Picture 1: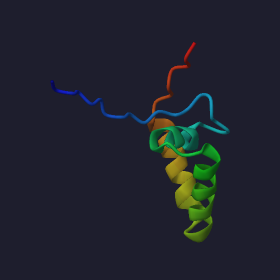
Picture 2: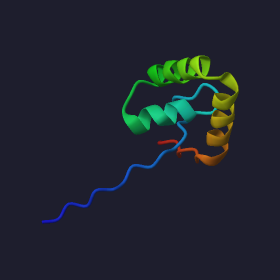
Picture 3: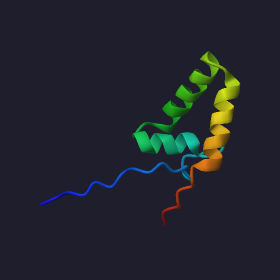
Picture 4: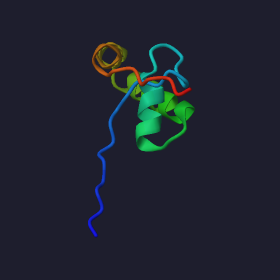
Length: 71
């Protein structure tokens, strides 16, 4: 019997969003807490440069589709 494994897809989270749902979607994709992903995102932005992280977030917000809300 062959098991079919469906690949995970990255979506913006409509439930765990603060601004655009990018960090919430990343947290669901990697199975982490959304607040932990947000802290990591801010820490990387502060230690590298804030502008590239803002640009990354805006591009991800535009490209990554919004997950449909479950009823």
